[in-house]
Length: 171
Image 1 (cartoon, rainbow, N blue to C red):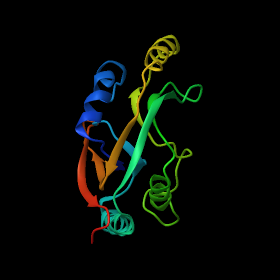
Image 2 (image 1 turned 120 degrees about the horizontal axis):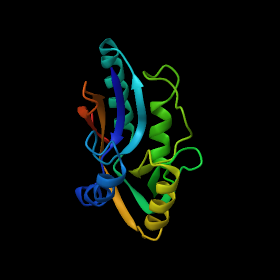
Image 3 (image 1 turned 180 degrees about the vertical axis):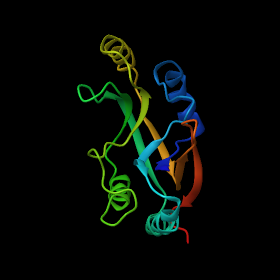
């Protein structure tokens, strides 16, 4: 089974991001806008108790916090993903590191951690350039509060759904 760990932004931010994702993200219908803490990984159902216990332990260690959305960026030339940048945030980074530590279900990270909200992906080079140049003129200056994160799993049709929610600072 495929799993992932994410933070969902406020409805206001999700609506804004979705206004672009409808057109530019083929995953629009599969998962709401989210900030990835641990990207998709394979695990057996028998791994779930250990994974859930670890996520509970991580959630207990951190209190609610905020992050700041700032501007539109791109991962090009690595890939044609356009995203809203999350300014460096120590808490997000520490949680991400704990979710990718040794002996953690799902293993280590594939890429360096860059917290972001995807607005477009899998675009042809020319379309990527057009969309990026258009969206790059937009200004974002928004704070988002985080008081929970979610363990998701992928359904047979490719859609993602919440398996469990973990409140920060709670038992």
